[in-house]
Structure formats: structure tokens, C-alpha cells
Length: 244
Image 1 (cartoon, rainbow, N blue to C red):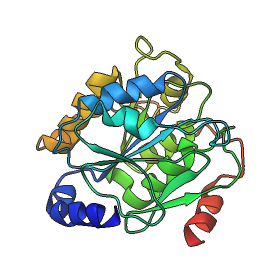
Image 2 (image 1 turned 30 degrees about the horizontal axis):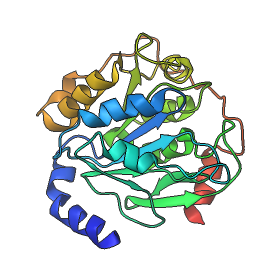
Image 3 (image 1 turned 135 degrees about the vertical axis):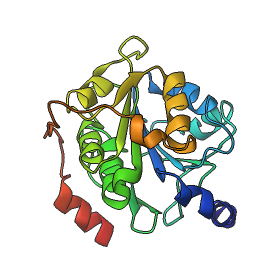
């Protein structure tokens, strides 16, 4: 599989670096499996950014997830379980495996680790989003879909603070509103939209010339660090994980 990803990365090098954005991270939990499927179904085959997705899943000890196959039925992109050390590449959706957190290391390489639960879950979105903010800065986009509690809010804040964009699922369409609303409360969310409209926004941001300069909200009240992470995760923790 690495050969396929490396080949896709080489072929898409110019595309992935020519636009304003380099990567999209997606966080989802309760009600988010369907929402993410709707989003992925509306992305074109030539979508220029790799997508890295965290869906809260029960432990593999309880059941073997077929999430990669489920999402593959809905999208023209290639959906796969993320593997340690592989490079991100456009045309792929890299899904965090059960029981493993996922971050992106310098150079755009996947790192998986089985540390303590964060925000009560593993995989969690906050480590992923924070690593995207660190490695890609203003070239990162985060998407927070339906889910309980507040995973992803801290990471959404980090991406927004780095100059990236955050899109959240609208209250009207989210089966469980907690996660997108928690992200919204950081002041970092640019738009709250349906999953299909989030996909259209992603296409505009990454494929329409100049869209990055006007497709955003002026944050009048500034950003508010939620400071809610429940678990051994902060900037120092990320430094240690990246260095390991």
C-alpha cells in the first residue's frame, strides 16, 4: 500500500502545494459516521488535499470495525486505515485505527500511538488537529462533525490560532450537537454548515482561485482557548510524541 500512496504523492506534489491548503482533518463521533459519509460523498475524485479522519470507535477488543469499507461505498476518494510512517497524499482518506491516536509528523508522515485516552476516547481528534496546526499552520483545515462532549474543540482552537480554517456541522443537521458547538464556542469556527455544504466549502477553499482570501469569518471577539482536554495532552505532550 505504501507504494500506491508514494506514487499518488509524487503525481500530486504540484497540486497539493499549489493551493492555499495542504490537509483536511475531520473529527466525528455519535451521529458522525453518517455525516462524514455524506461529506466524503460530495468531494470530487481530484480533491487536492489528503483527508485525515478520526471517528470515535469502540475498542477492537469489542468488535472489528469495517468503517473503511463503509465510507468507501460513499466516495470516489480511496479510504484506508492509516498506517504508521506512511506519507499523506491527495486522493486518500486516512482513517485513525481503533485504539490508536493519530498525529502527523514533520514532512507529512502518519504517526500512530496507543497512549492514554484523551477526552475519554482513543482515537481522539485533539491530538490530530493540534499536530496539523503545528505542521501546516494556516494551510490546515479542520472539520468538526456530530458527536457527544467536546473532543476536537481544543484542536480546532489550535488550527484557528495558527491561521487555518474550521468548519463545523450545523445544529440543525447534527444528530448530536456537542462537538461542533464546543468548537464554535472557541470562536474559531468559520462556518456551521450541513455535511454536504461543508464538502462544497472544502472544494471552494482548496480548488477555487482566491477563495482562501474571502471565504472566512472575521473573529470580532477573538479566540477562546477551551482548556478542556481530559488526559495527558498538551503542547509539551505533543512534542514528546513527535520526538519519539
